[in-house]
Structure formats: C-alpha cells, structure tokens
Length: 428
Image 1 (cartoon, helix red, strand yellow):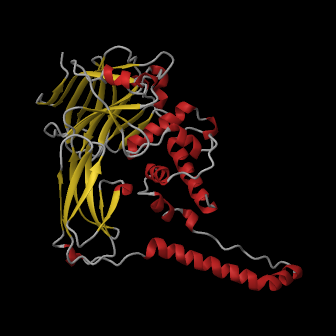
Image 2 (cartoon, helix red, strand yellow; image 1 turned 90 degrees about the vertical axis):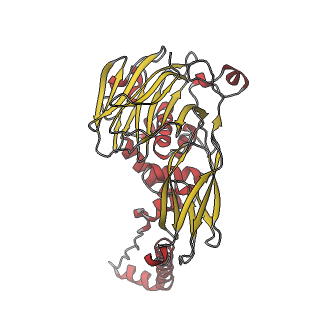
Image 3 (cartoon, helix red, strand yellow; image 1 turned 135 degrees about the horizontal axis):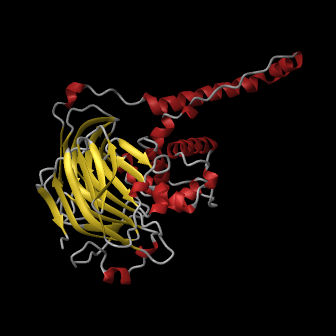
C-alpha cells in the first residue's frame, strides 16, 4: 500500500475512533470489533467482519492491502460517498512544500549546489498537485438545465422475493455529458455505467429495503425516485462479507425461526452468535405513517453454552427517509447497544442505555412506539426508555429483526396510534 494511501487510511481510522469514543483501539476486544462491525452494517448496509476490521487496525497480521469494498465501506461509515470521495475531501491532499534553510553560508552554498535537483523536485511536486486537483476537481462539463427537461427514469421489478432483478428504463436524449450511471441507492459502490444511446439497464438487488435509485450524468443526479425491493412475506438471511447474503429456510410453526432441517444441513452455527441473523418483511403491507405508530412482538434468543452470551437483538422499523432501530441485550452488555431514531443516534458507550438490558433467554414482550416525535420502548409492558428526534422517517414500509444467536419471534403487530393494524404475524 502506497504511503499516501496509508495516510488516508490512518485518517479514516482516526475519524472512526473519534466517532466511537471508545478510547485507544489498543484496548479494544474482539467483542468491540464485532460491535463495530454491527454499527458499520447498521449505517452503511454493507458488511465488514470483525477479522477484517482487526486487520485494518493492525491487530491481525495481514500482508495484503485492504480491498476496495473494505475501503469504500469505511469511508461511508464516516459519511463519505466512497473511498475516492473521502480522499478527495481529505486534508492530506494539501501537501506543503518543504521550507529551505538559508541560515548559514554553508547552507546557502549547499542550496546553490543542489538547486537544479531541488527545483526539479519542486516542479515535479507542483505538477503532481496540479494533476491531483485536476483529477478530482476539474471535472466534467456543467450540464445545462434546459437539456434535462425530457429526461425519463422508471423501473420494474422482474419478480417477488430475493434476489430480484430490477429493469430500469431511461431516456437521456439531448443530455450533454461525458458519462452516465444508474446507482441502486445512496451507496456509490452500487453504481453501473450506462450508455445514453440505450434505454434499459437491469440491476440485481440481493437485500430487501427502501432505496432511492438515481440516474446520474457526470456527477449530477438528474433523476431519482423511491424504489421498494419487497419480500414475499417474511425472509430470513445471514449477512456475510460481499454483496450476497445466505438465504434461509424458515419454520412454518406459528413463530418466526430458522427451520431445524436447514440448521442441521448447513454449516453456519446460529447458536454461536458468529453470524448476524436477519428477518425482513418489506413492502408486503400497506405503508403506515410514522408520526404515531406501535410495533409489538415477543422475542427470544437461543445460544450455544459459552457463546454469544450477550444475546444481542435489534428491532428496526424501515421508513422511506430513515429508520428507527432499537437494540436489546442482557444487562451486562448494554455498553455495546446503539439506538437510531431518525436523525438521532445514541451510543451505549457514552449514554446510559441500561434500561434496554433484559434477559432474552425466554419469550420477552417488547413494544416500540412513536408519538409526538418521541420514540418509546416498553419491555414486558413497562416503559423503560424514551428518546426524542427531529426528522420524520416517512411512511414505514418494512420491519427487520437482527440477532446474534438463533433469534425467534412471535406475536408481531404493527399499527397506528388509533389501532388500525397494518401487519399481524405469528399470533398465538
């Protein structure tokens, strides 16, 4: 890895450490890196395993450079669009020219003797800076607004369920630009080059959710629209590094759980907590306004003895413009919890989230609600936590459960403040 890239990576690590406020990374445990992995996935929708993160922080010997996927994901966690974007906005691009010493006659003599080589070096450095600036900033021609009037952009899902191909139809006639792209979501890595002479392009979505698909000319978003990649009822999957998860067979026995046949015939050991188990239900119910909403369910987490002792669980309401994400664990692990409520984020490292600690070994009723821009949480019918937020997340279009361990769910209901039910599943 080149020295410049190493400097960028060091800066990115520093920003992440400041964001987490967990103290020196020298003292981070394996569990800390697993928690960071969860936080990165929560924010970016992309997966970096704890081992990969240990390599980035030099805790595991690894002679190769980080992959592009790793670099882009780290950059997105600190609010850059991509690794390239992070570098283009990094202060490390502002390189200074060394100041020459002329304090003595000998220094002056040395300077005169070496001046051809010295000034040649300065000239080379200046050319390099010009190249870097032009590479990142010179950019592409400004797109005339008048040429965008007839731009069209729409989509059609090929099937239901996951994975799912989405056919995008577009018209770019008359748009004067050097390059054109379709981007599946906010994630710049999911960007594909297209031709303005064609009118269709097909992308594959491996995860369900609510996305904002973008049609891009040069670096300008000329059209975007909301796109729901739905599930066919409930979908179970396990995250892994890379874009393609492991899809699961679910039990059809009155509760949401992975089938015993699948567990017996496949390698991932859910009880160890080494994998993130997800259950999704997206786009299979009518969107529900998030201004006043109640999300109820009962959950429990089975773990192998000695493994995944924290029984970490996260319940998520997916909105058109954001999410509400409430975590739970046993009381001894609440430092690792991380609440997201629209624009509000609350870390268990720097805030007291002990009220979200509960033993999930047995069925536990939990309720997450919203009223007057306050998220409230109940455990076993008792109000335990509230957090205000400012920005609405839009209509709720999906639900998600995340577990470390074999999480199970029953008695799911989603309703508005007046009792109108949008979804009921696995009722007793």
